[in-house]
Amino acid sequence: MSQIKNNKIANMLYEIADLLELKGVQFKPRAYRTAARNINSLSESIEDYYVDGELKEISGVGESIASKIKEILDTGRLRYLDDLRKEFPENLQELLNIQGLGPKRIIKLYEDLDIKNLEDLEEALKNNEIRKLEGFGEKSEENIFKGIKLYKESQERFLLGDILPIALELKEKLEEQQIAKKVQIAGSIRRRKETIGDIDILITSDEPEEIMDYFVNLDIVNRVLSKGLTKSSVITEKNLQIDLRVVDPSSFGSALLYFTGSKEHNVKLRKIALDHNWKLSEYGLRDKKKNEVIAGEDESKIYELLGMAYISPELREDNGEIEAAMDKRLPTLIELSDIKGDLHIHTKWSEGDNSIEEMAQKAIKLGHEYIAICDHSKSLQIANGLDEDRFKKQFEEIDKINNNLEEIEILRGAEVNIDSKGELDIDNSILKELNIVIASIHSGFKSSQKELNDRLISAMHNDYVNIIGHPTGRIIHKREPLNLDLTEIFKVASDLGIYLELNSYPNRLDLSDINCKKAKNSNVKIVINSDSHNRNHMKYMELGVATARRGWIEKTDVLNCLEFKKLKEKL
DNA sequence: GCCGTTTTCGGCCCGACTGTTTTCAGTCG
Image (cartoon, rainbow, N blue to C red):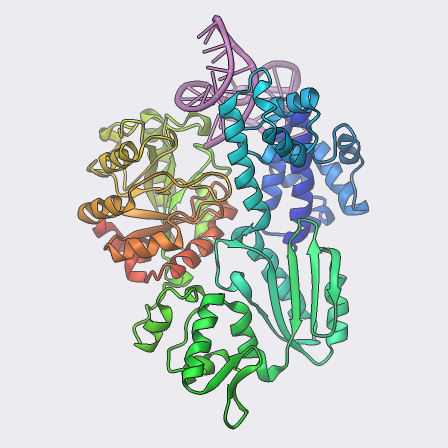
């Protein structure tokens, strides 16, 4: 297990792609990105592939990229990348992350205005210099300005889906060291927030010096910020900060509570403690009069003494969970094991990487009872969307595999496109042959609120539509949610019995935690899907379930917690 | 640079949208 190495290599390949793109090289950037993406979604360490001589087994990796991977694994560096970097100012490729800027315009900005980095770009914006350039105007300035804002936000926080595997791997490594006893990830990761600022890890150990030595010398570490006996902080190459704290076993629970947060949750707990004439801190729950610790080792004991049920970390946002815990009316949150199937799976038929059979096999391994193959429809041409004829052909393949596989049920599905008028791009004669129809918006994001609402509502009125996919369309750090009136959408969904999707893709998580809670309060049922484009994406279900838990969702709120028989009845 | 039930060489998703133009380039998905 070493996602960290895979990640490092993928990032270097992504950088090559960016630099080649700036050079105006065709096709190669895509080849490098494909390889990088596939390496990132490997479930095993790339080193294992190297050792076994199987690098070229990785899809998208051929002769040339394989030899580059070898060079990186052997030497830690790559000459080819070093040489490419020399051709441009150090941080020019960073500008590719800004929405609205591509290679052509970046090169123009560089050549005409000597813009070498983000700082130069902001300066030029301030002086209104960009609008004077040929091909740019006031609107361009405005869009670049907005793009910078989103990009900066993305620099400060990381996606849960990117950080969780790293955090879990760190935890595992620390646990392997016999000198660390208890190991727990705290902070916003433990609360499974959609974005993460840094990683906080709490441990107990009798050998703090040894464990700190081990920690600051891990290969993920780029810079050591501080190193002591109780706390050390390091920074990784991607500017992610990791704090490791050694705490006394007698206060492990109170420290865990304190460092898990949220701040607002903790403040309220401390107030309640004060009402009892107690004092709550990271060192324990303490009786002020007698000056003695009454709890600290165990987190749940603290909640118990404060007169409430144990509160799952995902709920700790001071959104009513404390009151609910006191009244014993906390929801029984959905668990990953409640999920019985995945109803949004792409395959090679459209833009997925794997075949129907491969996806089904992976789903069996994950313990799913059923999956729905929901490839894109024809108007999404970039995704090689299916037209009516190809859907018919796909039915045959699905039915055939379904008959051959006893362990799983494969449903016929589609993710059809909602056009600018709210029409679906696939004929009802095909839709009625499907077990599952997801309708999604993939274009015309900037329509007015009324137009957007009307489009979704019109799609929901189609007799064959079951699910609205990624309802708000947001891409975390990239695209704001659609300007929808969700209250109206929820009402229509509830009235018509349409399920709203919680799309588990790491940068979607759409519906968001907050919207899940609102949906639940509006009697809307949801479905949690992975939207897998590769068999290794199916594990994203974990992120969706975590988000649902943050939204107070119970298994009875979720379509794909039903067993297959009941699911079929519902549909 | 990768890949192949139309190819081991010659392709490589392509249309919509935006903002800039005055017929189109660049970007996005």
